Length: 279
Image (cartoon, rainbow, N blue to C red; front, side, top):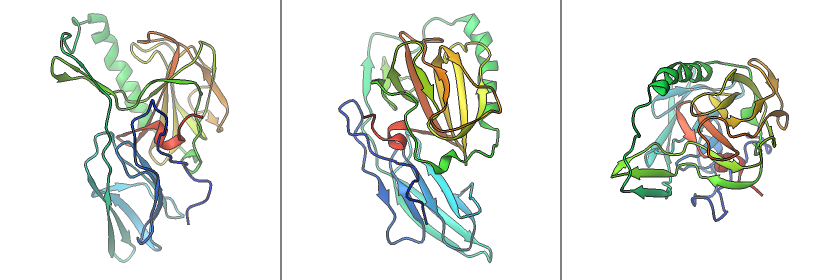
């Protein structure tokens, strides 16, 4: 059974957030879960008794010894998904899922091109930065934060919404992959759940600035961008609520703020559906 103190996956209700469906709990299903079946949502589930492995849309996902698992749905996830449990004797049980769409904030800039003039310095620096990020996400740790109710790493005015996107002369730009919280430089950033540090940049990255990443286990990780300082190092185990750094405006930022993003495997998630609305 799923514990009472599992992830609190609440739909955002503030006027600054895109409206999302409320959290759901499985009822008449061989699977049990709590979470939000929507684009950008995450569920924490329990597989049927005797399950040896679980698949989401035909791809294997991590299954803990007690039968628990996570499943996340990207910002652009389609309307249908399926969970499949495979037992030790080869029997399978499949549960179809309906993934609710979201109404994302779209800004159309019909007079600006998608890309500015090429920057040779950026072109030289960016590939090794991306390689570090990819390598960090590939690390497997013993983190158990995925079992916890997540908390906001900082609270304040939401200045950037997950999933929002600009269209430049009809050509879509990259959508916003996290949530921005406006805070003064030096404001403390805390771990939203237990985790292991998988990246602590030793210099500001071109876009992210001082970048810190935590693995929470089971394919779930957090990234904290634009920090003024980082207070932990790679390999450190951190506890929920522990200070891990401070807000800044390093990298490509126009003012001090914390950008917090969440990913489950390759799926980009909405922090407001994992930690609930900021109160």
